[in-house]
Length: 159
Image (tube, one colour):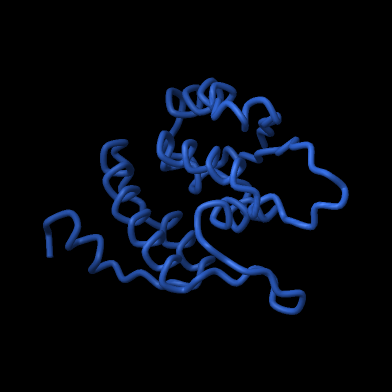
């Protein structure tokens, strides 16, 4: 597992420079193995009286939007077991918190994000010569979506 610390300063300056070295090393060595288990440790000073979750703070969300725009494959290499995928998606997709149900994503926004991610990552996986789509399918399952192999055939022009 790789943990990358993200400071107040990085967030406020939209600085994602702490990310590339670990990702570039992973891409150079073996992008076909999704075993990086990346964790982003957000170190953001928050007033103790501020009840907001990190994903409700606009500056943090904006930093994640920039990160996601530059590295759209990050969801594939996050430490899903530690809840990093859910937190990452919460930074990008409108949601509400429920004490009983946990995170409740806006269904339409989540569907749009998931399908955009499927399109982006299908192309990216193809550019990396990765034929196995199981990690992408599992990621969408974790978010409540079931992908049929026919979709990938369609996207690859084989449908």
